[in-house]
Amino acid sequence: MESQFGIAHVWAQGDFVTRSVAILLLIMSVASWVVIIVKALGLMKFKKYVKEAKDFWHSEDFGAALNKLDADPANPFRYLALEGREAISHHRKTSAHLHDTLDVSDWVTRCLRNGINEFTARMQSGLAILASVGSTAPFVGLFGTVWGIYHALIVIGTTGQASIDKVAGPIGEALIMTAFGLAVAIPAVLGYNAIVRGNKGVLGALNSFAHDLHAFFVTGARLTVDTSSSAQDGKVLPMKKGA
Image 1 (cartoon, rainbow, N blue to C red):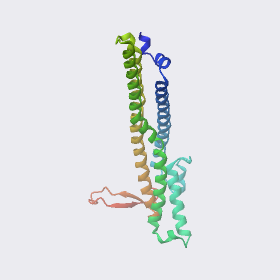
Image 2 (image 1 turned 180 degrees about the vertical axis):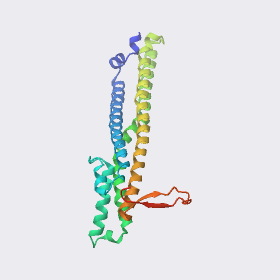
Image 3 (image 1 turned 60 degrees about the vertical axis):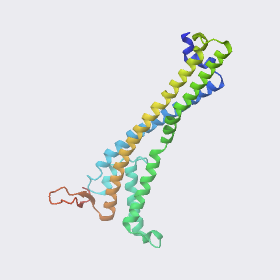
Image 4 (image 1 turned 60 degrees about the horizontal axis):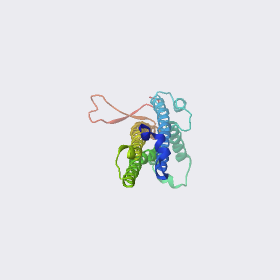
């Protein structure tokens, strides 16, 4: 009788609806785990880039600083540095374009912001899958549960008996579907929250880096906050290039 509560029995005795629900939950589980693994590996790589970016400003010139950043095309910090340099060069060497009416600070800000937006969209790709799986998997499992209980009621109505040997199979089907739904949803929700939290940390570092790049390209100096006692108002002062 215990075998009637097993997964193999559910698959063997289940109808088209039961098997379809099980296959759907399996697909959702595989999809969510693929996204979790890919995004986790990506976050590990991006955190390494964050550490490299912290050493960027401890260089004698921009070329030496650029060499400290990984040349991987997916490195957002190197991409922003190159975009900023290209933006400032393009703005100064061209004329008769609409962007010439923009202040150089606005132009560099626009270019850096576009780079950050592109990277943000890339980091957020796939998260919709985790959000969808986390929110719908319990209901898909619940549908399987309801269908199993429906089968149990049919057996009771057909046989006129409600003994455990008559309803064990359908009840086992219902319980297993509930467990499947939760087993798929819980990792998706936890993975989504962990990835979003990791993304926020990387994007925060990227925004700070872009702020410093903007100051470097526009004023030739990186901005820093003077923490001396004389700077009671938190005044932002320039720092030497390469500091």
